Image (cartoon, rainbow, N blue to C red):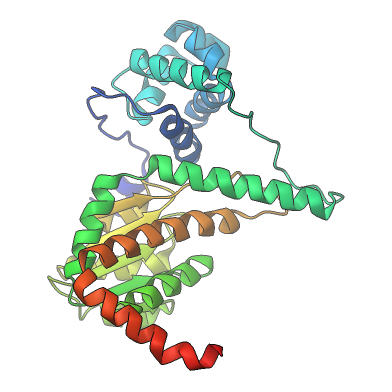
Length: 307
C-alpha cells in the first residue's frame, strides 16, 4: 500500500456484532475516531455521543435529517464505529442512554478558562484525566495487547520510538523494561532510530508511540524495523494513520478535546502511559521467574540513594 493510499480515509471492516460493544467502549470510540472521519461523519458521531438517548429513538432517516447528512453517511458512521449497520449502533445507544439514566454523572465542561481559579483548574484537569483513562481502557483491544505482550516477553531486543511528549513515554517504558531484565532502548533522534532499526530482525520488537500516527520521525524507523522482519507495535490515537501501515499490532489511545490551555499532548501522554503500563505489567507477568529477581536487584542497587 502506498503512502497516498494510506492517507486516504477508509472504513475498517466491521466485526460481526454478536456481542455489541459496551456503552463505555462506544463513547470512547466516538471520541477517538471522530477526528479521522469526514466532516459529515463527524457530525453524526458527535451527535451520537452528545445525545445517545435521543439518537436511539431515531430511525436512520431521522438521524440523517437531524445531522443534515444522508442515510448513507449514518450507515458509514455506524460501520466506522465497528457495527455492521445502524440497527446495531442504535441498540448500543439505547444501552448507553440507560446507563446515563441510572445515575452516572453527566459530562463536565472541562474547558479551562484564563480566569479559572486554581481549584477549578484542578477539578477540571482531574476529571479530564479520569475520562481519558476510562476511554482508553474501554477502547483498548486486549487481543492486540496480548499479542504485543507475547512479542515483548520473547523479544531479544526492544526498541521504542517517540518524540516530544511521546518520547517521554518511550523513556518510561524502556526504563521499566530494563528493571526487569529486558534489553530495551528508547530513541528520539531520528537518525539514531533508523540506524538501530536497520539492525533489527525477526525475534526483535519495535514500538512506535505517536498520538497523531503521522509523525515522520517515528513512522520512518518503524517502517525500517518492519521491513527488516522485526515484530512491530504502534501506540497511537489514530488507528487509521500512517504508522499503522507498518504495525503488526495496534494499541489505540484516547485523548481529551484539545483547548487553548490544554494541548492534546497533555491528555495523549496520560493515555499512552496507561497503555505502556499495561504492556509492561503483562511482560512482567509472563517473565515473572526472571523479572522478579531482576526487579528486586534493581531496588537493592538503588536503595542506598534514597536513604
